Amino acid sequence: MAVNADTTCKYNEELEITPFAYRTHTHGLGVRVSAWREREGTWTLLGSGDPRKPQMFYLIKGDSHPVRKGFITKFCCEVLTIQTSTSPYMHDMLIIWNNPFLY
Image (cartoon, rainbow, N blue to C red; front, side, top):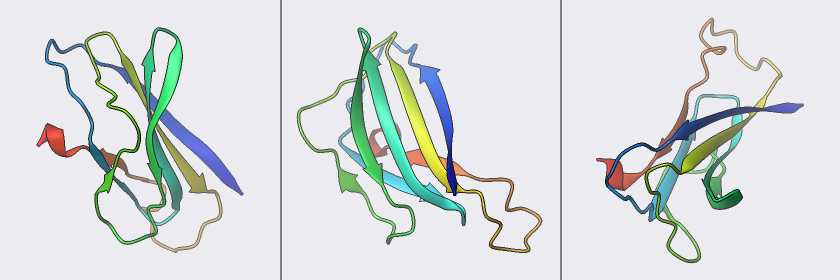
């Protein structure tokens, strides 16, 4: 069984940013990571990937999706609820959406 662990944040910077690639990463139990952008009540999928596949950057498909001040971004991680490890740290899931323009 899988559940979603979602987080949202409001972008408050004056600088407009445009995601052009993404990389998904989770610890052991993650099965899918997605990123969304909300503008004027409409949610747009920026990208989604399987963190179990080899780690690399994937280009965002479709038109440009700039993120401007006041826009909301949402990051969703689908995680398995079955404990597959005896590690005491498996409950500390790490969800990362890497955007190269932030580096």
